[in-house]
Amino acid sequence: MNSSQCTDKLDTFTLGPLEAGPACCDPQPAIQVRNLSLLYDGKAALDKVTLDIYQGCITALIGPSGCGKTSFLSAINRLTDLIPGCNVTGKILVHDQDIHHPDTHAQTLRRQVGMVFQKPTPFPLSIRRNLSLPLNEHGITQKTEVASITEHVLRDVGLWDEVHDRLDASALSLSGGQQQRLCIARALALKPQILLMDEPCSALDPLASGIVEDLICRLRGRYTIVIVTHNLAQARRIANYAAFFWVSGRAGQLIEFGRCQHIFESPSHELTAAYINGVRG
Amino acid sequence: MRETMPIHTWQVLRDRIVQFLIYASVLLISAVFIWILADLVRGGFAHLSWEFLTESPRDAGRAGGIASILVSTLLILLVAVLTAVPIAWTTAILLAEFVAVDSAFGKAVRFSLHVLAGVPSIVFGLFGNAFFSVYLGLGFSILSGGLTLACMLLPILASTAEAGLRTVPNAYRMSASALGLTRTAALVHLILPAAAPVLAAGLLLGIGRALAETAALLFTSGYVDRMPDSLLDSGRALALHIFDLSMNVPGGDMPAYASALVLVSLLLCINILAMKFAHGLQRRKIMT
Ligand SMILES: Nc1ncnc2c1ncn2[C@@H]1O[C@H](COP(=O)(O)OP(=O)(O)OP(=O)(O)O)[C@@H](O)[C@H]1O
Ligand SMILES: [Mg+2]
Image (cartoon, rainbow over all chains, first blue to last red; front, side):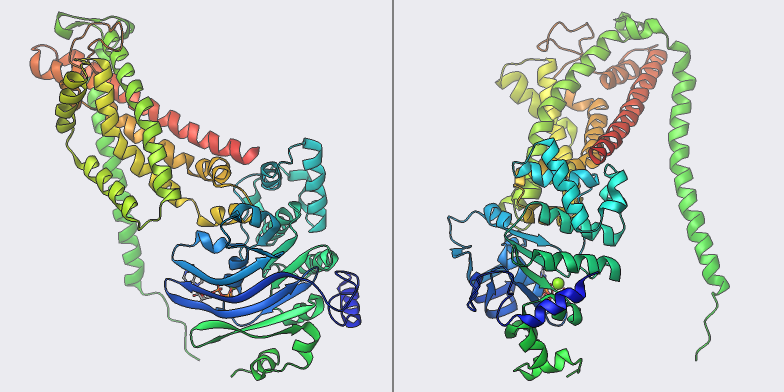
């Protein structure tokens, strides 16, 4: 495990990671969220969130249960389109392109913005087919190429040694943690530029969690990652930026956003400070 | 600290009683089925022979066999299923995948399907006679009988298929979409295979209904018991044959029993085959 290595790196950067993104202290925003409000059946779940997610950085979303972190992620890849009664207002630019613009095709957007769900969602197919089906649909059909990508991503999530001799078994026969790692591998295989991860480690044991954490750290710079986590220590270890959400009234709001170090060491909002110190208010 | 409450004897007793009732009702259902089967075997088995299956009926069915009846039945069924399945399943896909549950369009279609499902088969027979036989000029033929049955099958097939598609967890659609799969790809590779057992079960139910249908065929495919030459010939279905033998033909009891035995055996075979098929399909999908 080299998550300690990660922590070291974290201490050395000022704004954005040194090994990634633009060398200057002015990181480019990959996702710009402006005044995002989200309603489920007329009830607000997110209220006027404005936030930039920087290219090549890891941004952690933290906050109590039900404050709209998952909703925020699904708004970015327009998965909210699939939820009946869900209404999104505000503007989201992904790589300077308005995702709600009529010319933006949802499927094209989702190929740029991958997502790992809170609950593992393997397809009821074999492990191999779980990976090859999306690859085939993305136009990668050559058997050798698919096989090499399969091995590569399964090694990345530390699943290869566990499953390499039973790739044709049903993915549903894997344990919960293995299923989640398979889903991470599946998202990675498509090489999205942006990766949204909704509590990817919540179902994992410390070892597997460490592997995934290291993986996320290795992706830094190449991918823009937004990760939801309830594990504050983890957020602190891996994230460059952190956004703190809170439910005020009934709708979730963004309370504070800034560099991870800043949020965790000298938060400017008292709610943030209370949450991070585990004070119940 | 509170003591753990021991389970009362009456709670245990209640469990026992519920268990007993469940087993009793299962037993009752099986008993009814076995009774019917036993009765048919007792009454018809002696009459059953290879000749019975390969000869055409003579003397209004008292003598000879049911070969031409079987052929007509199969043809009617084929026409019905081949017409109804594509229409019904695309309707189901539309309702379950592309139309919001509470949309006016979806509600209207679903409502009309429910009404259609409740229409007695004799009404379908009259409609089929008026529309296919007379208006379209198909006359008393296997084709008009099959098309009438197709109308009857539509609501059964569409409703079961829609229900089947709705049992597929939404998480599959979500994650397929999040992976950038198109709706068609998700449908073909994930949702339809996952719903296949239910689709097959619905198809089976439909075929069962069609195989046992008499009223809808009386005025459409007719009751000529000759071997049909084409789909435009009249042909007598098996259930209609049984009805005719037992109601209109004195001394037709034995062949009626034997024909009923054949009908029930056919239903059994179709059931078993469809189950195996659905199971196999699911396994194959998981294996590849
Ligand atoms: N499909 C839905 N329909 C209606 N309301 C929803 C739906 N999904 C979420 N909500 C509501 O929106 C609010 C935010 O939910 P969301 O799932 O975004 O929270 P979260 O921050 O991800 O919580 P957790 O940390 O528990 O995962 C909650 O109050 C929830 O009840
Ligand atoms: Mg969530």
